[in-house]
Figure 1 (cartoon, rainbow, N blue to C red):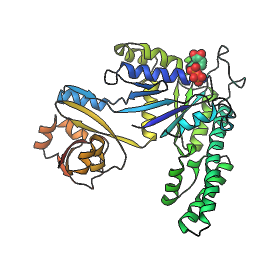
Figure 2 (figure 1 turned 180 degrees about the horizontal axis):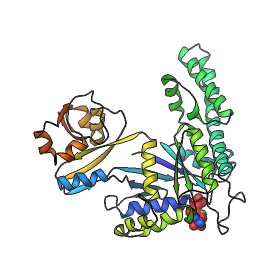
Figure 3 (figure 1 turned 135 degrees about the horizontal axis):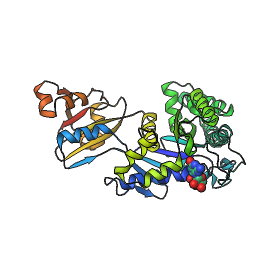
Length: 363
Ligand code: GDP
C-alpha cells in the first residue's frame, strides 16, 4: 500500500490527528486490522462513486481502497545529529511515499510549545533543516563511496557522481531534493538514494477550533510558503477531528454541516495525500464485491490488473472497460454493453480514473 508519514515538532497535534485517523479506520468494518503497529494506521479512502456503483450492482461486499499513515514522532531540533529519538525516526521516514507535515497554527496557553511561541514558519524551517541535514549525510556518504569506485574510469559512476554533487549543492543551499531539476536518468539515481526531502509534501495547518476557515495570519504565512514550494495545504483542527472520530457514523454528516464543512479534515487530508502521490482509482464491480483499487496515474491495463493479482498481470489478455459515467447512466454493465459503451482494451491501454474494469487473462 501507499504510505504517508506524519511529521512535525512535538506538541503540534500529530498524535491527536493520527488517533483520529486510526479510530476513523477502526470504525470501518472493512478494516478490522486498521492499526498494524502502534504508529501505523490504515484508512479507507472515501469515495462517493463506490456507493453509487454499489447502489446499482447491489453486491455482497463493498471494499474501498486504503492508504497508510505512519506517525513519525521524535523529530526535534538536532534530530539529524542523534538528539531526541533522532535518527531512528528518520529511518522510518525513508519508508514513506509522501510526507504530511503538521504545523501548529493554534494558540493555547495550556499546550506548551517546545520553542516558547507559536511560529509556523520557524517550525517548518526547523523540521526542514533536520530532514535536509539527514539527506546531506546520506549524500556525503554516497559521494565518498562513488568517488572511490569512479576512479576506475567507469562512465556510469562518473555520471552518478555528477548527480550526487548536484544534489549536495541543492541541499547545502537549504533546498529540498524535490526542488532539483533533473532528467529521468538523474531521477533514477536520486530514487536509489531514498532521500527524505525528495518526497512530496503536504502541509497540514492545525488551527484553533474557532478558525476552521483559516483566517489567522499563521495560516496565511503557511499558505504562501506552500504556494512558493508548489506544495499542498490542508487546514484542519485536530481537536474537532478527535471529536468527529468519536461520533457514530450517522451523526458525522450533521455535525460537519453544522460546522459548514462538506468533508472532515481527515477526509480532505486523505484525498490530498492521494493526489499528492499521483494516484488514481479504478473499480471492479461484480455481484460478490464492488471494489476500488489504487494505481499510479499513467498505469497501463496489465499493471492495473497486477494490483489484484500478479497472475492477472502475467496472463493478461484484454480488459473490458466501462467509464464510470457510462456505467452509471446505463444502469450497470448490461445496459452499457447494449449501448456499445463497453470497450475491449489491450496491453497498451492507459487506465483512466473511475474506469470500471473486468480482466480477461490466461492462467
Ligand atoms: P504531538 O506531540 O505533535 O503528537 O501533539 P499532540 O497530538 O499530543 O497534541 C499536543 C497537545 O495539543 C494535546 O494536549 C492536544 O490536546 C492539543 N491539541 C492538538 N490539536 C489541537 C487543536 O487543534 N487545538 C487545541 N487547542 N489543542 C490541540
